[in-house]
Image (spheres, each protein chain N blue to C red):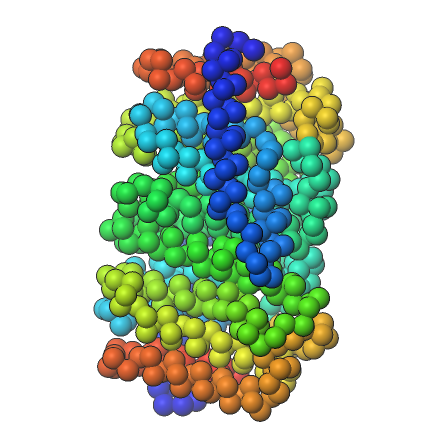
Length: 299
Length: 299
């Protein structure tokens, strides 16, 4: 791991522990017939994943010395949103995956109806956590967080990207369209993580351009790295099935650029992401380390 | 139709027209590969349904002379939330319905993956509409609306009720548990509609007790009426399949009480709902007319 790797690993472990503890409280299983819903939500959300989005929220908050408790609540919300998208994405009618984060997917461990509902419930829970006064005393901050998350998740964000991804199985998209697809499908939530730090840090929209640039760059680098894992990785290391895009005949960054140019492009994107942070000092070191890690996840 | 029926019919038609116009704008189809997603969302959301929840929002707003434009934005949000729940509820893994609001369900008219995504996108869109400054100038109002809607939709609201509804296919619930199930599954969104009027009318939580009582009563009356339609109605009049609960061996208000007592109970609930409005004058006439209409929908 590159310089800053130790600090990164520590930050990741700390965030992962905090997220698990917070989710354990938020998802306390009720003693009534909703039990199975909560169990499915816990199966999906607790104890797995790299918690990259929560880490990004915390790293963005570190830029502006945002209170860690507030950062963690937003981190829980974005993780709920991300996990819901995984649960629905894995459904038989979508990607039809059996394995996620090294465990059976929710519809395998439970059933399809429960997986649909667990995803829906995590989706709503993300907003319930964000909009709660416990997240931030200022209602303007809470309202802005809700608005940005809704935009990032909705038809002009993640859901729109996933629709494009479905269409990609029938049409061979050019590189520009794949870039747009990935900016919506993965990039929008990454963008929210950075934006959330700025919102809580009271940075006006015009002061967030560099954060949006950083998010866009690491989002694309992340996706290229994901494409490379899909081509070169093992299911064991990835915690999910690999080789699926090629099998589906889906155009990706790697199918367009080839492995070597894709890898070089990802490195360039990471360098550019770090460039965007030049106005910040050591308070941005965690974001810099995350950018490097993005294309180096299997090390 | 009872006294106030003409005013009610006019109010319903006006709200339905306004909701369709607003959704037509919000769901303008983009000229890119997300087109199919928007078309599916439009299929589900535009031009159908009684728009009962939007009407409730407008009627609750009328109590406190809330600006109609603000009321309509909240009405659009609650309808998006309701429609998303119908789209997912109709999926093969859930209720497996072919017909909704007299049209093919989304997974029939499009496909299952598109239906899952269209539901997800409508879910996020509800919050996007609510949290937008265009809904209300005061961020406190926007944040509170988001919080209430998230609670009403999430695991301790509608999603929790739907999980109980799935469990009802395997266990015969007693009347108390069915009541709780329906309060979550249908009642929570009804509750939001009334609460939203109070939030925008700047009524503090302790001044909303009567609205919660009204919502709870009409929610249960609505469900009993729905159970009666399922037993006695035609698919044509209902716009959806009927006789499903009995076929699934599911306990309902009607299976517990019988048709006559269920009908009497629904009437009692409507009377109680109207009682809750006694502190209001003619500004509550629309809410009173809605309460009567709830059990009289097929007239």
